[in-house]
Image (cartoon, rainbow, N blue to C red; front, top):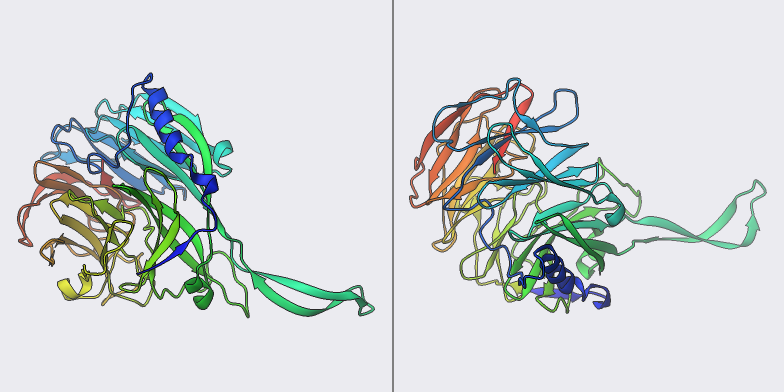
Length: 457
């Protein structure tokens, strides 16, 4: 395992006090210590509502519609002319409280956050609405729930390489241009901006910044950090996932359509907790890929306090690893290769943890296609403690690239799954069984030609 210390930790030491003061203020001076995620996301033995979310683009702009049900084991769910539209500009980024009675939304592209009560059906009374664009300096931040009291809003401001010319002194070619004697490429280090939000009343904390430098590995591979996301708190450390982009020194390119990064390892940003000192980037060559995910959760803390992190591999590579982080570093004694265990090449953008080392991983079957946009996805049940994986017997023609949320209750995991262009069901997986058929079909889900179900909250 390798690690690279950050240039300075002076600018981030106050984040813990921000989190603690924020929650204490929101709770009228009740002393609350933030211990981490608390309940696993989407988990509750006493869940009152299940919110089903559908993403649709009927006019070219992505919209998210929701409905709340008390029972998803039977009946029919339809979004034909119904569904509460979450406020959004580009898209809505939502998460729920553990009991399903509250829904939170970030208007990605609009720079606003919302807190709604869940009252059943299409009823989502608005409790609070706040503008975060001016505080964060962008309408496109990302956010993650830390626990039932606090969320983190964060934004990584990085840039690709740019050409810098060194000109000779006043040498004019005669047509108003100067002759340069040298050119090099420089990259700015990535600035990560973080703001804590108290979920009680969407109360803002102070904005803190930290700098993520270009590592020696990036210098060798012409990569740079382009995204930092998916933070998770475990014990005395905070882990942030990272994604890289690439640049070509001979032909600079920025934005979409540029060559993808060449990953030679896996890296994560780590800070000590609760002091929030000693920031560094840790790396391992056990896997090569991104650690920030897309819209599906990437890293989960188990009952022993270890973090299990799935690695998203770039195009034309096919080994999906789940790595273990422990005590601020990668535990290289743990190995879990999903592709080898299910017997086919895979790529995943995230997974869901069901407890006691059991999880469910949506993955692209890359033996048949290499595009995440293709409807060729499946789901595997993984047992991290025993090193096994089972491909579930689900329908063909699934597209799960943007699937975002699952709910666990009473040793059952709930997902909303619909084949492309067909009706589907709420799938209720028996977490205790390793059979590929260990699920029952719940409510029937009517599909829309322009929509897809993105989760149960």
